[in-house]
Figure 1: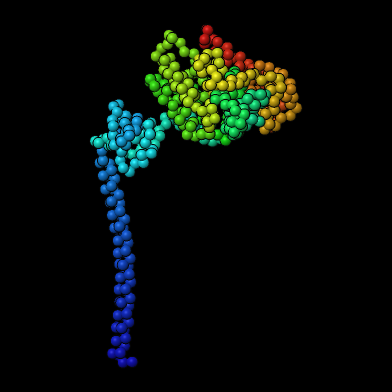
Figure 2 (figure 1 turned 135 degrees about the horizontal axis):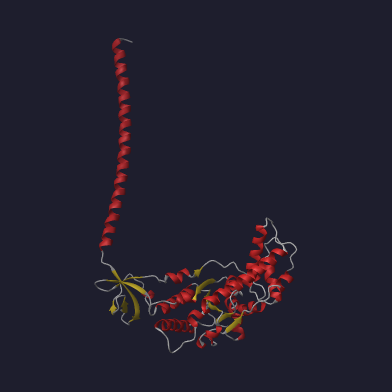
Length: 397
């Protein structure tokens, strides 16, 4: 090949390489263009969202109110959160079937028209009292209360699981159950066990939590508590230490006593509002039945009063067996232990088993002996007397 031919060939090769480089750069630029276009679309969407957010934040605030009455022409009587009531119109996009007395709504600040229907709101104390989880206590964990278990099954468990049985017989089941007994005898355990076996929502509240400083707050809490129980039905509403609000009403009362009485009257009204075969059962517990108001104790409210006594000899032996099922014990006579714990409650026996295990750990053993239980009985019995002496000292000393 001549010199000129070689130069032409080289120029052709250089031209092909330049063309390939240009094509590569074009592809890079096209990819960058597509990326920038997608980024531009994303930014435009974000700008639109922010504009809508700015418009929403600039919108006038809404007033809260509740429906008092529904008129024949479709308008509603609304009580606003500021106090006065108004007759207002309803927005067309709202389902009017949801509007009934007591429903919370949001109102336009200028026209007072109903803009939206608000969900039900419960007080945080009421929501905190709810126990969705199934309690882990069974009837097998309760010793010496066979008769009491039978009675609470008839009053609470059977109406929830087999209401048709009561309808066939033609009687109404007990509406409420009151558990009466000294502290530590198993009242709360019994309520938890029946909740587990009925697969019901267990709602526990201490009655003292329903007492409030301001007028009407306690009654409002009671209404919300029963509304929550109806919503979570089937449910068991357990009111512990009910004597905190259920004490006898007196004429010479302070403003605080009168507020407690208002809370009690609301509780009585709510209990009267339940149907006998409803899926909500009321269980209450107290260790002071002598101070409860007669209106609370009458049939129709607490139809069944179950007494939880101190455990007898056989019951104490059974309770010892229950609390030592997972313990590594050797040479134990439950009959002897039951005889040495006369007058003690189930809670005391549980404390004795725990103390006996601690004595074994302190001595470096992996099993519990009879001597450990005897030392634990002495400690728990002395501790109980010491606590009672300290209480009497503070009260009378």
